[in-house]
Length: 265
Image 1 (spheres, rainbow, N blue to C red):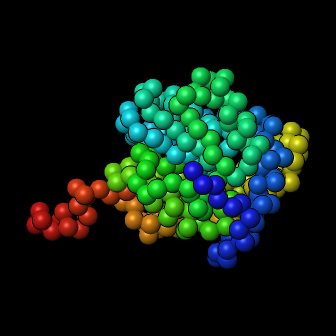
Image 2: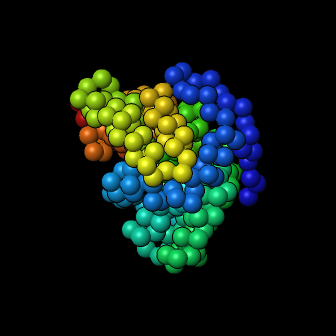
Image 3: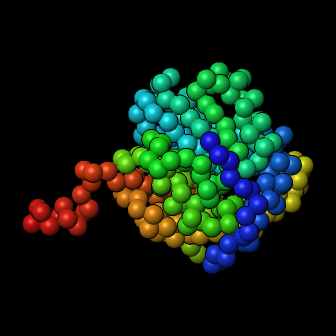
């Protein structure tokens, strides 16, 4: 599989930070040694349940392959392995070599070496053929790419018809009670904890800024629909601190709701 460049120029996207891939890669290389510990601390271990829910809604069968993008240390991919039959295989991609090294070590410790593969690649140019994977996921990674629409389209491209694209992310909530909850977490609670336990507190200041500049759940949903995904499900996790989007890639048997309603009338 050909690997992709990690030095693409940032793309102008409304309200998004300018995110050079090489800068993000360097930042995650620095935090990789304590990434799992920090995720548990900063989320109160809620991230474990969020990933479990993602895999449940992906609803993969017992065969084929799944792809986890911006896989980090592989937690989503390992949850797929835990919930499914031993015949399922998984690929994790990331542009941080340090994260992939950690993921490979964990695969060995968990007994998943024969079922998983880790590839250094960019979410914006996935090095896989169209219609390859039963499910394609990304957890807390789509916010870090320089072109969100392109990233979503790439995930949809490599997903098989009938499969699911699943995106778990911290998002910019509308100005409601839930927005106050997310603001309290990202702007006040998280920075304090990060200063106490994080080796690179700047990475978690970036997290707050990137959430504020990112899309709302409705806007991300629109991008998924523009990429051709249907039957979109949007679930807020823990008062909207995180949001889970799941869309299905239509197959030959899919009938759009408007057509179905017209047939029934």
